[in-house]
Length: 394
Image (cartoon, rainbow, N blue to C red; front, side, top):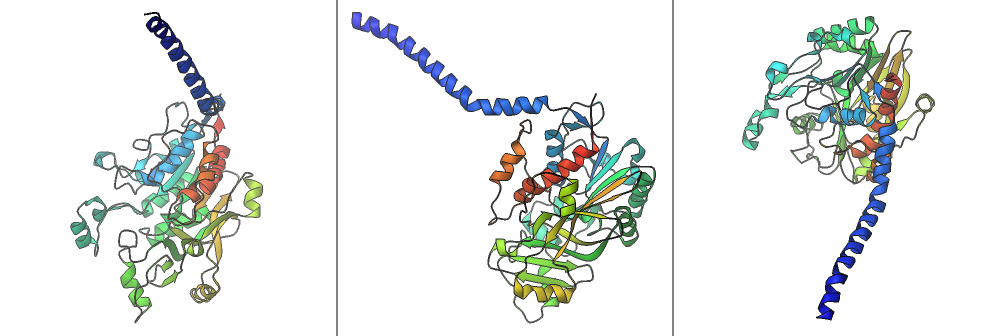
């Protein structure tokens, strides 16, 4: 009986000690996260009167502006007077899936209410994007119908008036490519001091994979490479608006992918830690006009037997990625690649140092992913640009 009694007294003591040890261990393990969260909380709240535009939202993934919104929230940059986080579903203008009454174009917005306009994507939404059945998608591949999107002349004129009144711009990759018509494109080009060469490109890990290769590529390949079998494996393809095509296929992703890097001028203007990650998404080959500052560049893979293909197509090995054009009143920035296109971002953004951790983790070069370019390049570069544009809230 005494034995049983002693056991009864000992058990709660052991349980309490075990609980205390467990709690202490958990506190030690979790303390870095609490410290990181506290540091994030102590950072000043900043304000930026920003309008985000995204015409390419066929689904509820909001992939073309999700990366931008995560970055704004992490940097604690909010619209004037607001304390709520940027909401990927609500806080943008463009195509609204399932809410056609809310779908609006740039030309329908009173832009003078804003200081900055950020065009994340203007390619648009096609009928094929809204079809779930693989069979229906295959049948519609020949002639997909544009439902909404493309930079119109009215949109470009609205942006021109906005800049003329002192507004600032950040334009991304396909404002000039895809569905932009010549008058609208030329006016938009003038706003950022860039000229599209007609060339755009992208990296894929398997040319014969119909889920990732553009539907028009095999036919265009046959027209440019008659009597040749459509290649397989990883490839970089460059396509011109006049129908020309250059396909460079290699053995590994790393050897076939372009890379991103800051210029000397860019490092001086935007001091910070920037890597030179591989890039696997869409990009445009642009030519800068007089007065444009080139902050970052894209470099194509420099395999010796590919240089002749670049030379023949008049494609430069290195060309502008991030540029800035300024005058006394306005700043206009252009980003020539689709770097912030992400299906998912971390659930939490309220941790100081999280981008550095993500940049260290996302370093693989042997899988197709936008994450290395996003975390190692877009976040520090565009983050610095956004911080410079914003102001600390009083």
